[in-house]
Length: 486
Image (cartoon, rainbow, N blue to C red; front, side):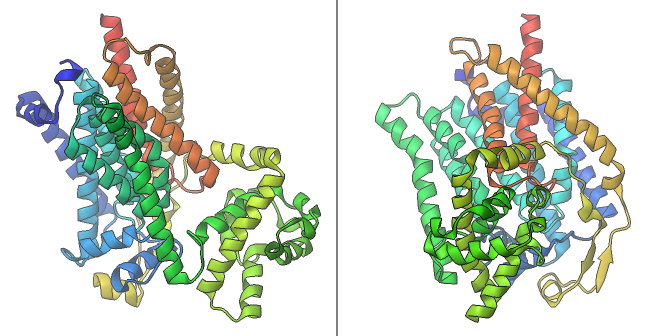
């Protein structure tokens, strides 16, 4: 089928074909079996220190100074239909599986991924992904963020092939939801701009420009609204104090050498902080601590110590002091980076980029859930504590490490092959190559932006890249098979 003949209506009609319907049934059964087996092995939710803040935001509307409120809003919506943690898992897993299936069948239809065994292999790798499955039973925002990402990218691919106003509106709605769930949703702007441009490529130039500008305008509105709400809740004029703490953690790779900066060379508001840092022993500053983000969390390291000093000297509570020092830390970190940009690239940016390709251990599997009144009231949990006895994810870690190496190697080879010979205008199947290139572009943008923002300290952080990259790899394999047959 030619690209010009592909439409969402025909896509839906294709499920009437026996082969497509059979594949849908097979994959739906695979997803259901995987979800059932996972829940039987792990019949209780996983939590993290941040989980309580998310639930508190859902239950009582308490503002989360650390994270955006989108995931708390999701928990609140799900709670309208089911009040149990088992119900939350069922909803989250179902949404994840449906978004995966929509992404997979859209990719097969639009990118013509064939033969059948290739598509089923891609689908099995996606639906059985340990990261995705684990996050559906984890009270953290990562699972929802990944679900929305797959829908976002699937909608972007559809917009390359046809001018569909409903799909464009759906795409922008997903962009807004992604940003509200995690601020890293802002990394999606280039993809959204490109998708809107190609969606209206056959229209007037003014229409294309307005369409491409729509995601930017939406982002500015979302950013402005989030900043105003943050200021209203905390009384501090900053977008997110977490960003300031992250910035100073990253810039800590420039210490202790940066202690030689004369305090008079810094803005007046940063001099006290710099004087405090200069008094800290050099041994407190290590690149490895910055790469583990220890400076954001450890009470024994300088920035938490300064926070406690700030609380004592001003009489402010922890949250207000954390927000105010976060704004100060952001300014201080940026000042250090501006002074030593080359050193910062070598010591932080390059190692942070490399950390994105690691295969992290899912150590949360070994943790123990400890009940609190919050969990008891919101989910009706009666157990005082719960520890999972199964260690499936630990057992498959060596296999995950091997597959991780193969995954990144395949992505690199396919990206090189694709860029070398398959993205020139005038070649057949141009829309397919454009949509596939959008998936590759998303992976590059997300990895690069994430590395600049923070080192990858958890297996969860690169999860949004995995499925679109797999789709791109299998598209390249399919395209290579077709080129050999022609």
